[in-house]
Length: 266
Image (cartoon, helix red, strand yellow):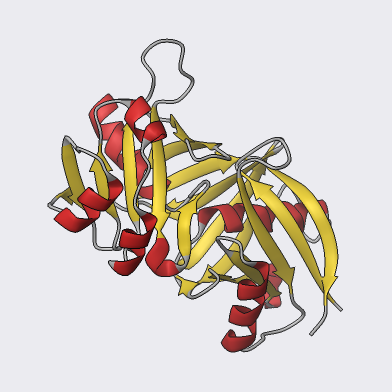
């Protein structure tokens, strides 16, 4: 039987953060099989971990409909499960070979630290139909080569309160738009807030998106002059991501909770 875990990532309590399925495999399985498992799990992403020689691991991520190039929360959860099952030494760095190249995870007390490539966004227009479907009035829009569109709003409350037209975003095949604003001025614990929508990739709204913070960290470091920063993804489940920009890399830090252990047949 193939072992399976459900993990809530970027949170320290169950039923918050971003839930992901982690599937540990003895060897490679066809992409069609992995896609079928991800559709069955019906979570934002399902991760598949395969050991390699030399102590490294192959890592791939699938939404319910497509394989993706990069996923932060499922990488964090994969590293967390490897430590929890004593498959890796918690004093060591875990090397994942992925479609985005070599990704590294390490452990700091109860947190996992991910070493990801930074994704710098430049000021650019985004489709007016997408802005209209989001129902926002951005003060600035940006885009980057990885396909992320970014709408910057003036107030964090506007990010929390927005109610996008998901059917229209899906029809527009929107596969990655970030809505963000600076954090609360009075008493807030976050430097910035965000939400992320990708219905074109089978994700109506992602609860907490590590890869989006590879865009957000360089953006808000430049605007706020702070590093490291704390990002709060203000979805219904919500989650906190600590970010630090180091050269052309972003270090993402967070915790996780295992909520289910099981076996996968088929």
